[in-house]
Every structure is written in structure tokens, then in C-alpha cells.
Image (cartoon, rainbow, N blue to C red):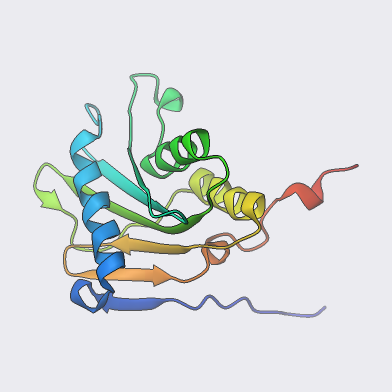
Length: 160
């Protein structure tokens, strides 16, 4: 038996340490929390995708009384970007969350389904992208979205 280890490189930084472009995308993700429909959880998530052409596409979580019919902010933003700009890869995706009390202190990370979609997105465009997960005072920055999902299931796993 052989044991192996997976390591993920990321940065934890203060929001003011981000570049101007990164701060702009972060602000858009926070702004997107205001369009969330979170009647049941009161957990408002916003995402902003900066595309290669400079366009920013925002998304927010949209809940439903039948919870499986809900959609996360990350997937809302990514799917809207792909439907509207199908030839533009994502450069940066920022994610923020708040409750009725305001922006969360600590950064949140995407759920498993969103991680799968983010993996497929980078496969689709054959280009990884930066993910910035935002908290009230700091951000967790992953320079390659593929680090969110080790042992990912992708198209290479499907039979021909």
C-alpha cells in the first residue's frame, strides 16, 4: 500500500491587498448578495465572474421551497456568463455571503456541485481561473480553480 498526499496552494490576504481589478470583482460579488432570493435560509450568496473580455457577470443564490430546485450563486453566475458570452473564459470568480446581520466574517467556499461546475468550466475553455472567496476582512485566493476539487470527474472519465 502506498500513501500519497494532495496539497492545495492558496493565499489568505486582507481585502486591501488585492489588486484593483480583484477588488472590483469582489465588490460586485458583495453587490450580488443583494439580489439573492433566500427566503428560507436567510443566507445570501453573491458571485461575480470577470470574463476575459472584461465583462463582469453577476449571480446570486435563488431558493425554492423545494430545496433541490434552488440554484447557488456560483452556478447562476457561471451559467449566465456561458449563455451570454459562450466564447469568453472566466478570469476571476469572486464569492461573498451574508446573513441578515451582514457580510460573513470568514470567507465561504463553494458547495460540491459548484466545484464540479467550476471544474467543467475550466475544462470547457481549457483555462483555469482564479477564485476569490470573500469574508468581511480577508479573502481566500485560489489561483487555480481546479484546486477546489481534487480527483475531479471530467470528460476524460466518460467512455468514448
